[in-house]
Image 1 (cartoon, rainbow, N blue to C red):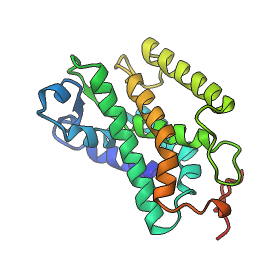
Image 2: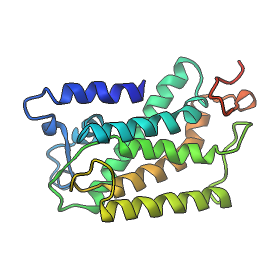
Image 3: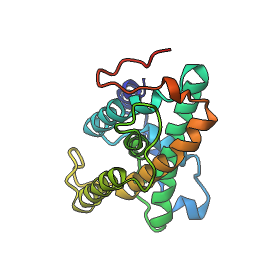
Image 4: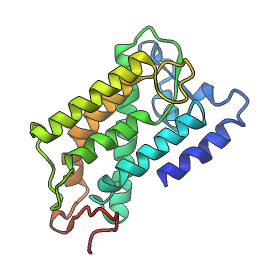
Length: 207
């Protein structure tokens, strides 16, 4: 549903008088205090169809293992809250380290990277337990992802970027927050670890 919402929302965004950019986030606004809603609204906007496609693909790849941890209606609410918190953290993190940037920031990449950080802590854990933060496999994958993220952001090689600034810092903040939050989030929303499984065919765990 999150992946499907992205092209639908972008279709609506294109029809707004200003292309939706009045709802974007400006890093400098964190310090001026004049447009805090952009922390949330910006994650529902995108900079083009390529941007939409990349984030939708990321949602398809990394949302399922996280969503399976959170069953029933309570779990749906918990999953959506987790997604939004990671997105807000990514956007806020970008603002904190770029206080002089006035260019509009749009996209759900911070939230997608939050799902990625959480999903990697579940990698290969068929009992629903999380890999420790100091687990060598988690740390090595996180290091590779963050290195690629930094290089992509600094060099600007992302498809569809078209010269726009890539907010790699937002990706990094989202990833770290997702990796840190998934443990307490799982406990808060009543995950039944004994029944959890993440098989390769993406089917739901047994009830």
